[in-house]
Amino acid sequence: MATLGQYVLYNNEILPAAEAQLSVASSAVLYGLSVYSVFFAKHKPESMLAFRIPEHLTRLIQSARMIGLNGAEQFVEDKTFTEQIEKLIAANKPTTDQFFRLTVHATELVPGVKTADLELSFSVFMYEAEPILPADGVRLKTSLWRRTADSAIPARAKVNGAYVNSALAKQDALDAGFDDCLFLNHNGYVSELSAANVFMVKRGELITPDCASDILEGITRRSILELAAQHNIPVVERKVALTELYTADEVFACGTSAFVAAISEVDGRIINGNTTGPITTTLRNALTHAQQDTENAWVHTLPLG
Ligand code: PMP
Image 1 (cartoon, rainbow, N blue to C red):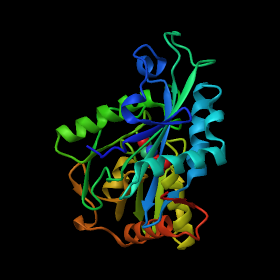
Image 2 (image 1 turned 180 degrees about the horizontal axis):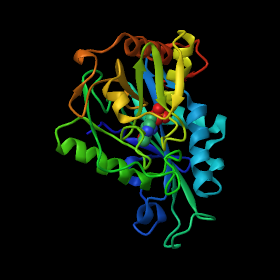
Image 3 (image 1 turned 90 degrees about the vertical axis):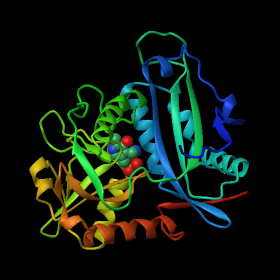
């Protein structure tokens, strides 16, 4: 279990974690009607270096809009948000790298199954940034559960309730002795992992399922595509067949909580002789470097307080 910060931000207040509670009768609890995002911050002796905050706030608001939760914008005014995160850091005094989970919850009590004009609340908690996958040698199992279709609950929106789909598939993979699942979508094409996007390398090209493959449009995915372009690695977003992964030169997953994780096996097919490939290594190093580079526009320096 990840080490949770003692204090959380809840509706503009810094509170002990135990005091930030949702009602059992709220839409958030009844229907999983909340949207969220998680950003990473690197711990330095005098500051935290937060990665791509504006992109996370934009995705949070877009997730809320997509499912019709109106009024979420009030929580993420750029300046106020950063000031609140600074207060949260000062309260928790982290000594390690952290993940920050931001959630807009529908806290209206028993309104029935609707999404508009509901009371909303906003929380942020932080926890030690332990990766959800090993950095190397990840073993995947194609899930018997398919990715929720864009026409059912859009994976593009980060909706809490939709994560039952991820939990089912991840548990299926864990039960079978694997590290994570690989989701196919309803058309049978490769989609993503339970909480990370997937890439493969074939003949020097970096290929990843496109945004119509029922994926969450990951912020790390976008960073990897941009870093690859900077390294003159050709990138392609398109439909990907499962058997293409079986025969790929390299496969890796990426996400805020997975960083860049090299996949060594998909359904028992060994990738790249069980070793981490050169393009995976280059892009992993590029991401690690970008996350620590105070000159990089993707990084916000927040004082430790
Ligand atoms: N796909 C899913 C289903 C996820 O939950 C995540 C984690 N947020 C990702 C991909 C990766 O997205 P990001 O890089 O924005 O963390």
